[in-house]
Image (cartoon, rainbow, N blue to C red; front, side):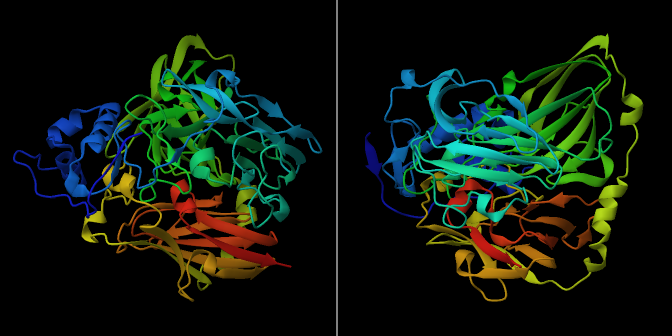
Length: 569
């Protein structure tokens, strides 16, 4: 593979508006157009696929003044890492088993199953590639269990990397949390680990590795748990339940996955934005659901993307927000769309009351992506739940559970966490690229993102009390503590962007965002903190152990954006 080493300098982009630039064009839009050598109007006329392919091509022809390592074969800058990694490089692709259809498995208390990461052959955008899958499946098996159950997962590592299995969002026993160096050693290739998973809470959860998530998760290692509530009347009746796993993958100009950093994650600045959308591990455009007129469908939605935040709607069909990470909201509410960050989950009921085709879409301020269709035929559904759907239910059991914590809503903040970044030798002002909602919906500076290495970027969780960062501090709590944590996303950092912050082993309530109280609470394990925002969280510290918390943008986590807290008896 031929490389060209260019002189090292700082990438700068002019923000001067082009002649004829639309009056409503934002700074980021103008900069992106100038970087690509086109007008803002031409940029707006591009499809998302054309846009991303043009950025890839631009990466391959970038002139020498920008100073970085570029790969002539695939057009992507490799951040100075001359050796990339892709799954299955040491085996013949034809020798790998083909990807299997995702199984839906119902388990009872005391049941045991195997959950093995494996190398498989899968098709992405018409091209066969080596990927990973649990039990040969992408997504892995959807495991449905009743609230209060305990199951056993026996995991034998059949891939070409060390791995673990983290059961995300579940308040399980600490020894089964799947964090290398904290709760277990990594599972070596051909090694086996036994996980005992208990499910104290209803909700929708997922499992994934906690070793090089930027590779293993992005290449297919993820799957869902659906935990059914002990109360059979907890949810309104629906005609159908459907699991939707949102993802994207970055392909080069030849349609192959762009290689990952061998030693450390590449794309450490904004994270790895994909240019090809996936639903349930397959091309989103191919997703199609058939239902009858008047059907109410409950969608369990999980975002497993490395960095992309999705804003999803159902083509004008009426949507009712029912639940999130750790169960139901206090009260159901009508919504027009769902904004879902990496690792978050949402439960929505959707009414398809008219025959025809409804388009699932991700619509951001910068682009619109087709995420498949729901086709509604003219035959009426056998059971009509439109009347029940029209009622916004309040959940007395959820409210009663939260009542224990309401006296603490106004308590003083116990811990403050600041989200920040250090960047070596970079111009401060040029890095502020985000929309007014504080979210980077696309990689607006792909050259910069691709050229950076972990040596140049350090994402930080800073404990405001001690000034210590990431793994250099340890928060300590006692079992039963009710703790208030404030998270401040520093808008003055060299590159402010949104961060989905995930806490292991506990549940919390998002009390407020930017001082505005949350008037409809739900238990969470992940909170999206936009650029410049401040989130106040109230924790139920009831689960003893040593636990991790981190940004769930995979490249930020791999780059060190993680910390530890201890809950002791």
